[in-house]
Length: 225
Image (cartoon, rainbow, N blue to C red; front, side):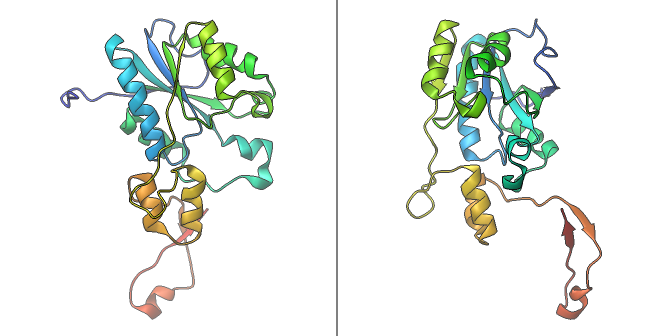
């Protein structure tokens, strides 16, 4: 049982070099983590279980902004969470530390092998925890099989967590950020909330509107992106 008298404080780092060499044992998980939904919670739960026997820290590595907004800006999806809210949710989900890498073209131009060496092996994790759709390196060439090979060569455990399905909804859909965005775009907010594991929160600047609230009898807010 977690000791609630000593709340954990998650530390944030901007580069691999910033992460302290004397941090001790770690278990790593990498992803965009947009929405920090139930699928992401499954990764962090597994990471915490793997970390526990060695009192290791759980480290989440993420990217800001979303890589697609750099590689294909015209196809960038709407965010489910702001950058700061994502970090708060990662802390609540069990991350001890987070490394926020700046999304730059050169970061996504390196090979899968080079990405592994620079951003995973350098941290010397006991284990890396990912889902079955995880990809890394240029053109997403790094597959789960490649991850396992590279991890084994460094004596790092590669733990692959099955996709999480949503038994509360018809056909038990897989939980991922894309299907949550689609549910919100189609007005199925309750479905999105179930997959998120919490109510969806909208963030933005409230601007002036056409004062429709006066006509319909209750206040409204005009949220700008």
